[in-house]
Length: 229
Length: 372
Image 1 (cartoon, helix red, strand yellow):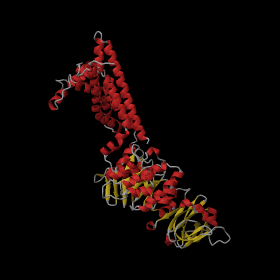
Image 2: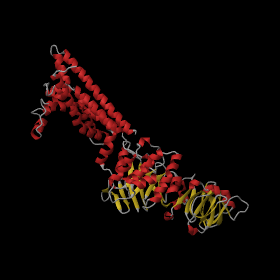
Image 3: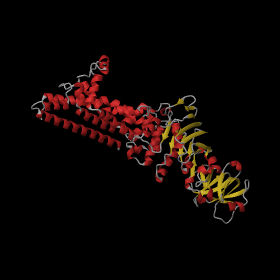
Image 4: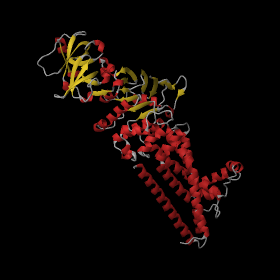
């Protein structure tokens, strides 16, 4: 199967956008999952709803909100460009942001579930052995919820690779910059004689999804082997 | 001293415990389930926070609500052995053992890695994962892990409760060795009297969130008024006797109990070493004079020190030898028998104890240093 340079570019961009979206989303996802699983605080229900918002909102709405907030004139967009020199509008970074936000609820959910399944007594035991809170998090909690983190990362990755509505609304479809696989497929389908290209890109998407699934399964198995000795 | 005076409400239950015991040897925290034993130990360890009060161990204040002191668990240096071991499933046995050791200060030396390995016979297990350990092995690793964190005091919350009898018998000797080889104070939570008898020096009796009594184990178990809490079935006295000699031909060991002779089944112990015995009230009969022509080997002179009527029965405390020796046996007789013998406090009697009634389980060897 031979790819045109454009198609290869779309594939590599998707890979990069999705991977970075997973990594960027991971720390806040762990924090939110921990807060939701372990802490009691006023407004927790609202916080929970906020985290899950991207799941229930139409992606186009999320894209629109991102445009309003992170566009060149948006309050957050100005803040990031003034203070950190980061622009999101019509840039691949915007595609990462859109993908990370759309995948965020999946990531939080998977991590939260494995946190809730973890016996807090194990962490208490670590405290009595001289480990402070942060130490316990790094040496006990995170290693033990690794399967949840992996599952969350996989879901987020798959969602990021497939993300369409929020991305096209927020950062448009610029080849080489924001035109990820689904956007490229959409364009190919729209243009006359693009069926063959669309088919190749679809196959590529399926292959990518399968590889991601297999990789996460493999990691989870290795972890389990380690767990059970 | 270990000084505790704490209050904590959780739901319907209120813990209101006030007690001071020597921070040395093994102190048993005894009580029924629901008496608040685990809550109290969790408060000591810093895993639960009392609403108010004070916890001081050997001069170090761990908690004081009035002064706003509440050391986090990692700074209390209290080893905690949980009922369910709570080993780290993602780490090998060796990494589990080293977890607390790596985090201990350099000046806190209580036990070295090799010492713990040898004491608890852990060397063959080092490479294994907790999931591949038996229940007894798991508790041994948990013990070693807590020891290596170099604690100032060891908390053991029913470490044997989740094990079957065979596993219990496997772990108990390790606990005894631990007690004998380290000068480490221990608080041992249990609702099983046999374990308490084998291990503990002092007893804190917890009842519905309050300390009902505290003191040396012989004293607490010698009190008839505490019998409902120490257990009716187990009712009996705990005495300390010293070994006089062996009768190899009959397989018996001769003991001295407050000047009186007591024969028990053979125990491998040197002369002059001290043994703690538990003799149940229903195994002790009373006579007004030495009895001839009877199979009972032990006839100990003493006098009635206390009497308490319980329906058609009478519970007696018999001070063996002279009352000043402080060694008491209990006897449970029928009210009719008490009446016929006209038993009364102060009356000289003989306590008859069958040699076979002194159960192996009721015998524990006490190191010379810890003997009262």
